[in-house]
Length: 199
Image (cartoon, rainbow, N blue to C red):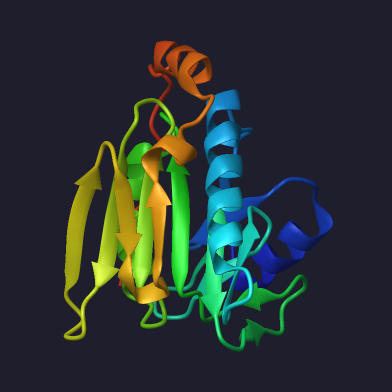
């Protein structure tokens, strides 16, 4: 599929799908645990950013990574300053400052592997959060001044996001998710999503 064919297909069909290396990736429906974690995260991020130069979008903001040609729908996107968009229909954000992916059993391999590498190639992205929906865990990537990345895993306490000058509480992110996460863990034998990263 060409990029133009993807954009037309995505515009005219219900649901969301991502595009990478000429391949269409359908975004499957989310579990209850996934939805709860996304909701908690979005509320926490939006609340902390209120009144500042950054704003958050949930689920439906499509992002384009020019360096690799990826079109993606992160679970949460934060943009600081003036947003820049590609003239697609709908618009595609070109300069996200932070992307957040809530991992599901079927997408975790892709999100932690190829998709993460796509995100890391976009210079505007200064922070990436990968948040599990099966166990209480967040992996945080922060871009350093020399374009290297600092990785940290968090199981408890607070998670500082220095480039955006905010902190997130693990208790707040996973509030009310225990039963739903247990059900998600029981269903964790679904096949993993794979999509190759090509230059």
